[in-house]
Image (cartoon, rainbow, N blue to C red; front, top):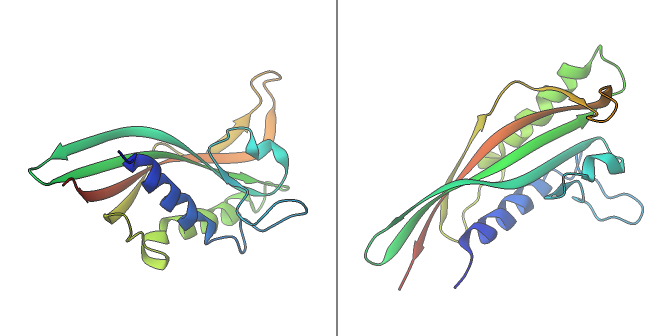
Length: 153
């Protein structure tokens, strides 16, 4: 049986990679979109913008011949900054372009019929847990909800 969450996650990651220009470009030895990953360590590997995804809660409602799925994907946005002065004016367009994806690159395969985002808190500075010093990254956690209806028989 197909893991419907994995199918939806793959579609979501492909959707994010449509933002390769300007956020997720190819670099030497890596294809465009390498900054979109389930690997929490990817922001430490260079680049300026990253999205890390993880499974979140879900809801399934089974009907006689179909199933309604509500998949939550924990979506962590990371942005590297050089100067504090223009930090938030640079972060806002990055976040805005991701929030616009349901309109600019909608998910409409594998029974997906809707997608929403909700912030799980304010954006903030990433602090190194070992040194307790600020890194050169800011982040914000979003709850991405993907709504899917699949035929069961």
